Length: 93
Image (cartoon, rainbow, N blue to C red; front, side):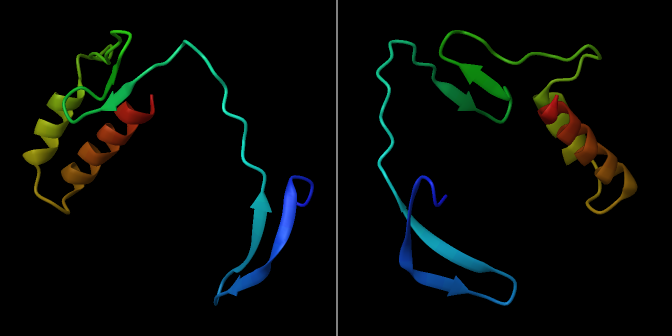
């Protein structure tokens, strides 16, 4: 950070952290014709302006089916935790 800007006068101190404030130059905005809009949704996990949408995985699961499965489980149960893990794996893959 010292190479990209300069240290400001203030320091923030908490029980766990010390935060130094830096002043950096404004980044240069790149002009480009390639713009992609992305929408994160509940049923369709990802929809792009170029027409791409997430679909079912190789096992036939999509986000709507996983959310439905999760809604039927009792909160705090082992099956609820497994369904949460299933959702987490679907999102991260």
